[in-house]
Image 1 (cartoon, rainbow, N blue to C red):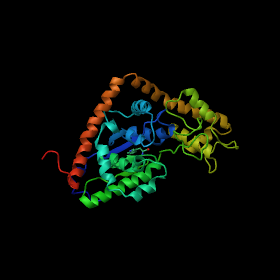
Image 2 (cartoon, protein in one colour):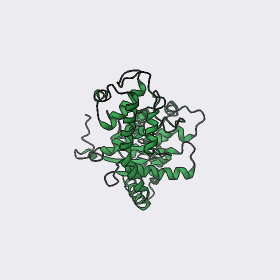
Image 3 (spheres, helix red, strand yellow):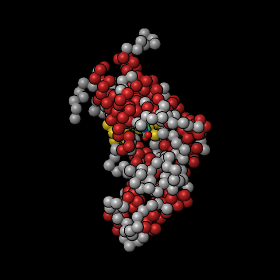
Image 4 (cartoon, protein in one colour):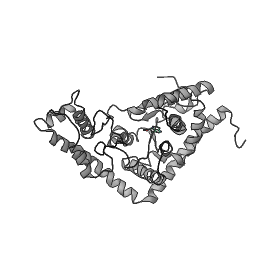
Length: 337
Ligand code: TRP
C-alpha cells in the first residue's frame, strides 16, 4: 500500500469511488455488455460510491442519426436502471448534461501526446473526436477521483492511458488526480459471438444471429441460441478448441453460477441441442425481469427525467471540485476573484 497519510480525503472511512460508462446504442446493451460489465455495476453499489454514465459524447465520434441518438440515450438510461443501478444509491447520469467532462477533456488533450493517441486507434479516416476519445474517457474518470473502473478487458488500454495522463499531470502540478485502477472482476465473462465464437460479441455485428441484445424477445433469444455455432463433437465439456461450447458454458455459468464440472455433469449423455435450449431459456429468464422493469420505466418518462436530472446535479457538484482544482493549477484566471 502506498502511504497516503498526507491526503486529507483519504481518511479511512472514505468509501472508494467507482466510475463507469456505457455508450447508448440501438437495441441497447448486448448480453456481452451485461454479463461482462453492467451486471457487476449493480453489485458494487453498497460497498462503493458509484457513478455510472451514459456516454453520449463518446457516441458521436461515429456518425449518429440525431433522432436515434436521442431515443437510444433515454433507452440506455432506463435499461441501466432496469439492470439494477439504483439512482438513490449511485449517481446515474448522462454525460452531455454535465459540462465538466468536455471542459476537462480539453485540458487533458493538451497534456496527451499525439503519439500516445495514435497508438490507440487506426487513424485512417477518423475524425478528431474519435482520435481524442481516450482523453474524454480519462476526463470522465479523473473528475470523480475514481479508485476503480469496472470495464471489460477491451477497455484496458484506455484505462492505462488515463493513468499515464493523471500521473503526468500530478507530476507537473502536484497531487491533483487520484490514479484509477481497472476493475475487471474475476467472474466477468468475455462473451463471444454466437455465429463466430472466435470473435467478441459485438453490437455492430452484421450477422443478426451473432448478438443477443438485452431487449430481444424470448423467442428471438432462444432462436439465436439454437442456431449458435458449435463443433462436430457431441460432448458438453470445456476444452481448448471448443470455442462455441466454451462460450455457451461461460454464459450458462455466469448466470447460474454453476461450475464447468457441474454443467458437464448436468448435460452428460445429452446432445448439443438440449444444451443450447437450456442456455437460451436461462438467458431469456434472466433477462425477463430486466425487460419488464425497462417497460415500466419507459412508460414513466417523468420519473426517468427526475432521475437523470438529479444524477446530473450530483455529478456536477462533485466533478466541479476537480475541475476547479485543475483550472487553478494550470493558471486559468478565476471568473470571480
Ligand atoms: N470506452 C468505454 C466503452 O466503450 C465507454 C466509456 C466512456 C467509459 N467513458 C468511460 C468506461 C469511463 C469507463 C469509464 O466501453
